[in-house]
Length: 229
Image (cartoon, rainbow, N blue to C red; front, side, top):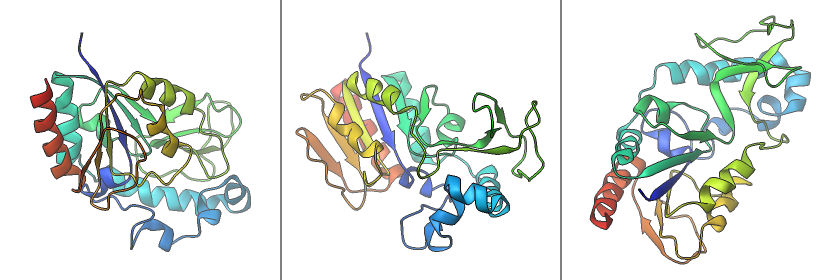
């Protein structure tokens, strides 16, 4: 039986694919007030602005390709039972070939009904407009968990992390809750590898820091984990 390797990934994972992060210098939050583009109140007050914000991000995603980090993680499925829990709303892990990806904060390529959240649609192009309706006639919204909304998949994520034999954290500062708490749900003896050039603090035992960007860090991890096998 193969060991379970759990990957926790964040915005830094996709930065090398040309996708901007929110909190880094020059990131998207410097161009927009979060309360105006990523909250239920924003959607109520100015849905056109919200849709334009996500259309810009989606258009960027449609041109993006998986980077070496995404591809390296997908290759680890040859050796491990790999589960990815990601804060990212892009689908670059899936495009790279990873088969089990849980999106905590939603998915940018999808839209859902504003009345029935179970009605979710994969978008064929990048633009979502006022007047685009679900099959029941309700306006479609981005399939994104906005600030102030519940992360409904967090319990599933906790369950995945609790099963980990190895945990890799890549591209996340571990500053966004509830995702930041996930590392505390590993078994005490589980080795944790943290890939980040800025070395976020993880107050756990068995932590190995790899101060690299995602692509180079995952290459490093691949060698370490092959040795472990």
